[in-house]
Length: 217
View (cartoon, rainbow, N blue to C red):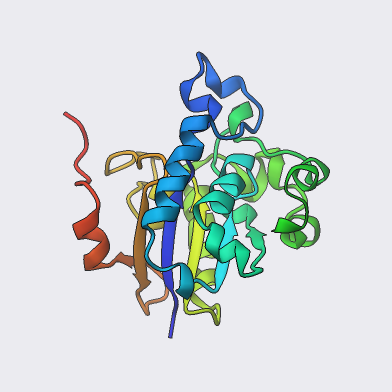
């Protein structure tokens, strides 16, 4: 049976608050972003059920996973760095760091083998990681299929606002987001459709917990 997926947008990063923050290379979380993570950690009710932690290899996503799911990390689970979950743009804020820099900050907390072995070009913003909307949608489907076929029963994935739209199907081939932007540290829970595209369906509990998804006027 496919796992339950808890999808999380990273906490507030320095790029979210700075003037022309898109120019900050792979930013970390602000103090407020860390506080947002603390709120998730306090209120997330499924820490004891999580069997796999995954995060985009961008620092703000790794940091969000580390702080928001500290009880899971304390059980010894490493954070699987998943390049397929990275944000998609050519801005400095959405360009990842070298593995050596990531390891210097996070050490053995992270499992980086998918960067080293499978996607060594993940931070070049080209090929599978191009910002073209259709490429992003294909990447989102690849990621859904990967998660759907895992043996774990409940999975956490920390990703990014725009890519979350592609992952959930709220994104057109022209790159238009059809629902509102995810809030920093917003988390939603999904089950998998058994169909070919491995679409995900938000749970009733998750829908009841979050604000509406209407686009602003």
